[in-house]
Image (cartoon, rainbow, N blue to C red; front, side):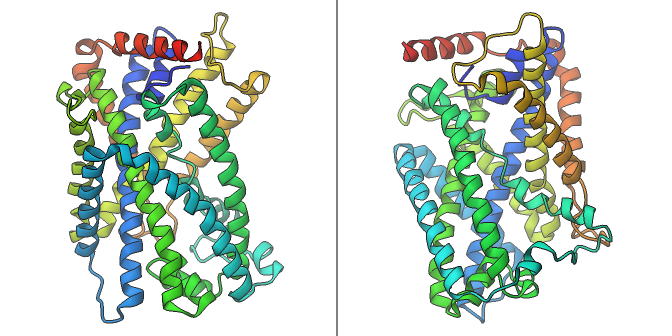
Length: 420
């Protein structure tokens, strides 16, 4: 409908009832922006843990420290922010390389694990009900287990935040999102089943700083082979981090362009043709938050937990407005690439699924609950919502003029011209 960098909050503004349009857009914009900052922090933290895990594997004398992770995160963000600033033209080619490696490593991991790893029985994989989480209910434990894979179903809106720089975006972006989810879903289920059969000792994997390293080591029995396999994953993870900086920078730029963030961050550097200030704002925020790791890893983990809940909430709001629009007497026209008659039932199912998952995202993953394993996602999400709500009454309700209508007009006209 509108291939524009603001994505969720622009769709919400386009589809929401007229009387609530401005308020819902304000809340959606802040929730989406905070969630993407958190997602960048989570991706950076995962990549840093992978690097530290490889150091632990190859240097037995190495003693990992929390501040090491902080330095890795800061160094990685500085380098990749500079790449987004000076060599943005190179990033699509690096993403293409990561995509090719994604498929290639799928085949390599599948062959290595099936050929070399120890085997579990089908009963172990499909019938075992033992829980190591501390929850007595298998129903609760099973749903708690959804927390990790649910994280893999956020961030696909990153493609939309880049859509103002994509040719024929009204067709290309939705197609890429749809087929990416389908293809990765098939690959993911295959790999999950493979890993469950071949993961070796569950206890050893859980005790490892990065479980996939231990799983590969048990399969190959070789540190160099394990290092080579995990380094392939590391390249992909670094690429994800690079793309996340690009996506959140465009969201930051759009939110500033629409008057919510300071206009200072809506500036496009004329020499690089990139919103440089918007690249550095989220990167610096995550660097500052990473310093929390030095005192307590739970503090940094608390903020990274916001990403999943925040983005699921942003999807729920956008889809809810879409359903309301579909059922209204005078619905706004949809985009040219849509699901037709299947759209409404798919939207309703998506809302039910999103609401259900979001409830479990607030549960602690282990019992008994302590300061270290506490799930801070819900409190941090509530804090971000309260910030948006308070800022609405202070500034948004009377001091904010709404979205930049001229930008919307230009983007829509550009899309129509490209279709012609």
